Amino acid sequence: MSLNTVTNCTTWIEVLQTQAENCGGQTAFSFLGRSSDTVVTYSELERIARNLAYQLSQRIEPNKTVLLFQVSGLGFVSTMLACFYAGIIAVPAFPPRASRRSMDRLEAIAADANAEYALIDPETAHRIQPVLNKVDSFNRIQFITVDPFSAEETSTNWRPPRLSGDSVALIQYTSGSTAKPRGVILKHKSLLHNADMIGNAFEGTEKDTNVGWLPLYHDMGLIGNVMAPLYNRVHSILMRPEDVLMNPMRWLEAISQFEARTSGGPNFAYELCVDRISDDSKAKLNLSSWEVAFCGAEPIRANTLQRFYRAFAQCGFREETFYPCYGLAEATLLVTGGTVAAKPHEQMFSASALREHRVVSVTDKKDARSLVGCGSTWKDQEVMIMDPETNRVCRENRVGEIWIHGTSVASGYWNQPEDSKAIFQNAIHGFGQKNWLRTGDLGFWYQNQLFIAGRLKALIIVNGQNHFAEDIEMTVEQTNEAVCRQGVAAFGVEVKNAEQTVVVVEVDRHYLRRVEKENKDIQIVLEELNREIRVKVAENHNLTLETVHLVRQMSIPKTSSGKVRRAVTCSAFLEGTLLSLEKKDSK
Image (cartoon, rainbow, N blue to C red; front, side):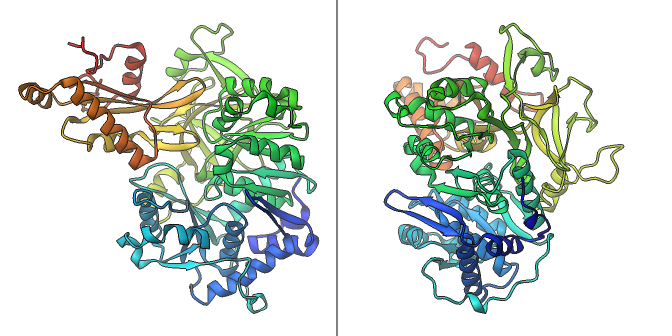
């Protein structure tokens, strides 16, 4: 459970000071690098935060937004805490890659956050400097290279900023639309509340060890592997995401070596382990210490959990170790979670009924969709299932939009008052003056468990990354003149327990006639268009398209107002009724 020494803290400065005072010599974080490992104690972390905060305060005014371009590791943790200590607002962001296209989203974030400064680690600064020089929009940003572990000692000069629980600590940008990034405003009190809630839900103690490899610039990695362990006095061992994605054995080896109790990731991470870890490698693992294998951030597939359990039971992994949960950036992180040491609640429901927003439990696998329960709420968190059209509470056994109220819910989007009002400031008749967060996710309660049924938003989730269908469609439409405007449908389909991306593209009839008049081989032209679409989407979204399905104009189902009907198009694609132009026998 959360330690009483920090439950009365109102800011993260107070939390770190309390931990440094009560257990200063205890290791707070460790980092597993490819060549060497590093550790930092609570007292060292507190001193480094004060040291860097004083230096930052000499250059940056309080309450300024500051981009954090830091690779995952102890430098990121120290720099973020130093921002708290300096009273400046941290904006974690993915470290830029050495290519121009990787800058697009960062430019949008920097503009939305109105950031004038960026804190960058020496490794990243050296790697991307040639690219930064070519990006005009970054000219107004002052890049400050920081190395917290080798900076000049100035910690005794630090003076605490004026902070309260209502002070903004972080702006957490959602991993979705590149066209319109939205920064979630996280105050100190929301972060503290969610960290305490995670400690309660995981039944943690200060003797626990956590292994985390997810990116530290976003919610599950940031809150789950940094903030919650720091609050609950859990030793957190951090790894770089790319190391685990390249070799998932490193993740399980770390759990085995350090006898970790908690660790987790999105559904795809467990699939990665099953697919890539050999039987010979499994013989080296002992996963018996693992008690909380949290799983969230994307649809949780019952088949994935079953496959992982069967694959690693020989290593001491228990089925009841799985901890399915539900959360989102707008609620800091955790919303609902299960019970430790309880097997996941897997249930089959009628697939056709779910499409009609009805909840019907079935036993026959025909027309069945297997879902995994994501547990219940904790502390003061409340979840209601609402009819998204009438904004009224759904009747029992109905699918609706998930609405949330509680201290963990963020206060809105940075510099976006209209979106903030629409998403965060909703009322429910009969529930007083409470503000409710509209998640855009569809779900229902069944046997005291929250089940996630789908999404109102047109999101496609691949390898834990969210992609808005509208963004992909816009990119494809702009590929070249062959593509019909309002003639693209993007959606995800489940193939071998993973979501893959499909785009159906209408090819302009006038373009096809011109190709025929010019006596060009139409199949070669279409193959070139197919390749061009794939390249554009890869460049703009860092996303691989598994299928590009070219069809004749007017083939995609649309509403009376001309909007693409994605769900109907997806069904037609799966049923094989959308004939491809690339088939020579297509009429």
